[in-house]
Amino acid sequence: MAKPGWKKVLIALGWLALWQLASLWVNQSVILAGPVEAFRALLTMGLTAEFWQTVAFTLLRIAGGFLLAFCAGVALAALAHRCPLAGEILAPAVTVMKSVPVVCFVILALVWVGSQNLTFVIVFVIVFPVLYLQTLEGLARADAKLLEMARVFRLSGWKRLRYVYLPALLPSLTSGCQLALGMSWKSGVAAEVIGTPMHSIGQQLYFAKIYLEIDRLFAWTFVIVVLSALFERGFLWVLGRIAGRMEGTDDLRL
Image 1 (tube, rainbow, N blue to C red):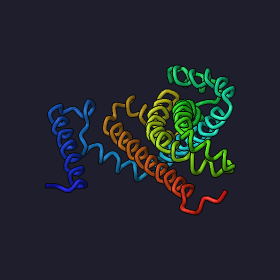
Image 2: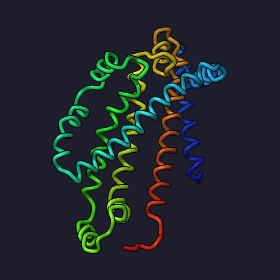
Image 3: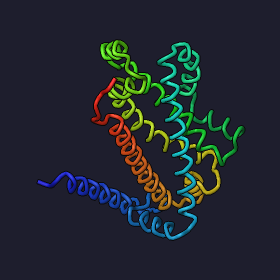
């Protein structure tokens, strides 16, 4: 029986073979390019400085929008948890961010901040409600008995966060980040396709569509998948390390 790692490789190779067979059956690269053509296009693009400039442009803006949304979502959710009035004030804005179609925000962002900052703004708008609500939910799960004990023994706010709130918050926050990380790449690149900022992956996808370069379209799609997976793994690893340090084994002194 194949090991789990080899099993994934075999499954991936099976899908690639199916893709190649479908491409050979269609026999029209402008309709369905095969994996060999896509890989050749990726190699060609990867040898140019423009490719890496494009990757850096999109990566930095999506990462920046996500990190700002993460910090703002956690901080404002903590404020709303401690002060219900703040939560009531923030609720309409969060509802609007959740409900309004992305394209509406894209049009407004194009008018207000221009195409070069479009990705950053759209990622923030899409990610913020997810992390805000997941953080609120996690904080609400904190054990009431432990909180009462913390009040009785007059634990500092830091120790309450570390030993009471963090264990309750971390599962919700982690699942929220997993969801938001995928959404950030989908919404960010989609916004770039609409706004076509210079030197962005979305602009390259738009050009691939215009010129019927389906091999480049698949190549850029592969780049997006890889960047999204690496960013997700990296961020969750850092989050886990920070949480691990905060949940350290030092003694609980009052």
